[in-house]
Length: 341
Image (tube, rainbow, N blue to C red; front, side):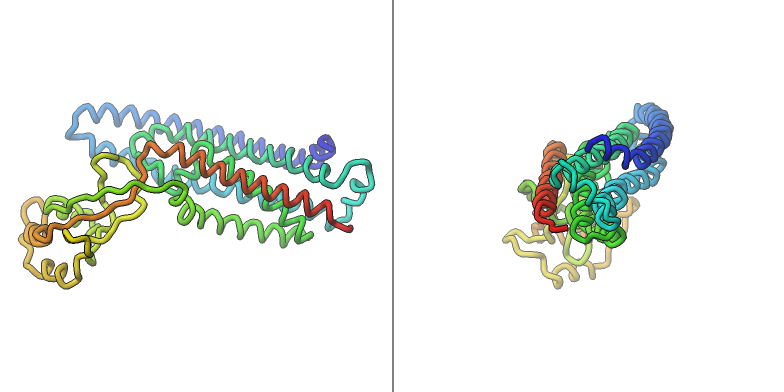
């Protein structure tokens, strides 16, 4: 069965190998370019006064390119599920060729399992190789920018894409088994998996581990910084929060501005401070507004995950996806054993 499955799959495998070779060539080119720029960045950072500007320039040079590459990598599991998984059984059922295999000595579950293992392993290898290439190419950039918990970055680096590929492929296979039509199975696989990939990092991933909590006093200096970042407004702090004891942390949630008793700063109090004519200094700060707000003894409560949990999240998320893949495979084996025709 493995040999027959390979013969049926060899054209797709050849296409995937050629595409992966092209990706490898481009990743090596981008990786070399990033490393050259990284050497320049480090040379400029020998003078601390120039380091911030050098970092900003280094980031802006490669950010869009790496974002496009990460988006492309995120589509690989979806394409694998759509074009490899969905037609795998649906095309056999649609054309009636499954009867030839089912009338031989090979059982239905073994027939399905051999296909899932062979082509599913190929899907994981292709996705994993692309992820490894991107991880290698972007390593100097990631060391400087340190946005490892960003949705696109997290899902395109290291081992997480392996789980995505396995789940997408097995879901497509099961969709084809249930729908028995190739095109509907492909459409359902593409839509459902892309939707799941959007929901999981925003809803499920933050709940994989309980976050730590920090209370940050909002002094006049902190409020000035938040205003300059454009993150202070409407009585809440939206962004620009730094955790002193956990730099580069993943900020899961930031509370509104709270007074000493723990209650949110009222809109009336907030607007009253904003209505004070701010005296803009030479450094561009809003001194009167910040001092007025700071008099309320404000603080924000921040839920965060320190950067040390990065690999824990990688393993947990990969494990969740692999478990889903195993459940889908088990369901497919159970379903095909009970098919009448």
